[in-house]
Length: 257
Ligand code: CIR
Image 1 (cartoon, protein in one colour):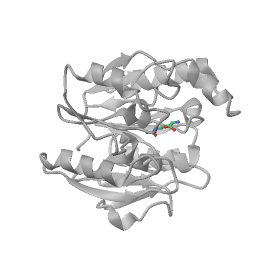
Image 2 (cartoon, rainbow, N blue to C red):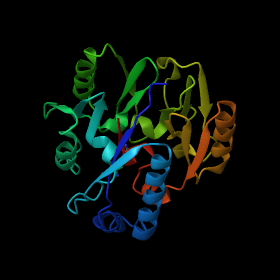
Image 3 (cartoon, helix red, strand yellow):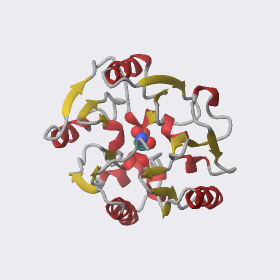
Image 4 (tube, rainbow, N blue to C red):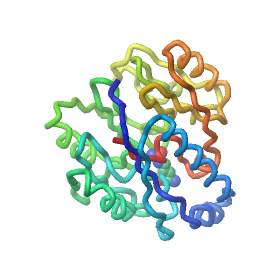
């Protein structure tokens, strides 16, 4: 299985996260968000991963969604170029990664957020979304060329990032939302579809023999529990309610390598 990471980098939640969304009339409990993140981190540790953390940046309310700031492949990191409100979050992440990774930057006209990057065993998919443009996708393609990795572009218009609506959970299986993407573009044998009203449940994480699933979508979690049993995986139900309010989910809370 391709995703066999041993390290995770997470980012502390700034207090400005709740203030920023309160102004949009979205009410997030800071204490609950912290507890949910703690459970997420503990789950990664229990799965055998070494977890380190970057300090929060109060001037960047969304910085807990660290996945979007960089794309990591082996010991190389491609620093992304984000939407104007989030641009700058990458700096502290780059500082943390530069001791272990060779850093590459993309031109500022290119836009790429790593929530738009998805891997199956043999292919990497990049979403063309509100956050990633064709030039950003081309930068990713060039970056991955030296690793012999095929990159396929996927139009995204029903959700924020590609992985908001489709993730790969190993054993040749994708989880996605009916009708959100052209599934002919993907190379997996099997697809599990989220159930009605549970679109966000498409964001799952497989770390070797563990499957992380969002607890607040119980009907789809049942389907995923069957998948876990069939494939000998340990299922972890994680409540991400306070991150879903900020349009985030499981994958966006860490960078893995
Ligand atoms: C944003 O708009 O960028 C954040 N509120 C949510 C980012 C979630 N990131 C992800 O799913 N990779």
